[in-house]
Length: 95
Image (cartoon, rainbow, N blue to C red; front, side, top):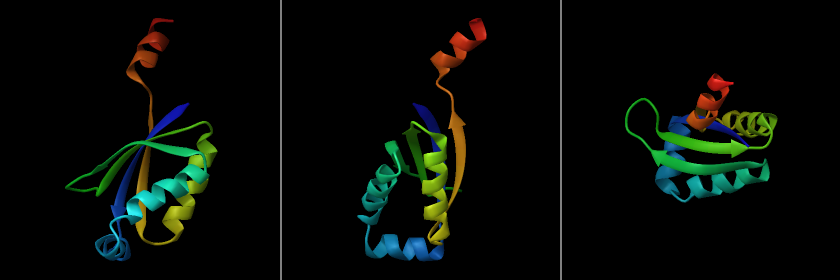
C-alpha cells in the first residue's frame, strides 16, 4: 500500500454545499473508494486548509484519477503529499 496526505481547500461552492449538506463529506469518501482510494484518517482543520486526509492506495494512478475528478467539479482544490512511513524510512536508510 502507498500512503498520501491530501490537503483540501473548499471553494465557495464547496463551502456552500458543505453548509447545506454536511454528510457530503462521507459521500465523497465513498466515491474515493470506488477508485480504490481508502480514507484512513480525516480531519477538519482551521487555517490554510479545510481538511487533512490520510489515504492509502494500491496504485498511485488511482488517486490521480480520483483527485482529477474531484477537482474538476470546482468545489475543492487539493495538494497531495507522498507519505513514507518512518519505520520504512529507517529500514531504507540502514540498508
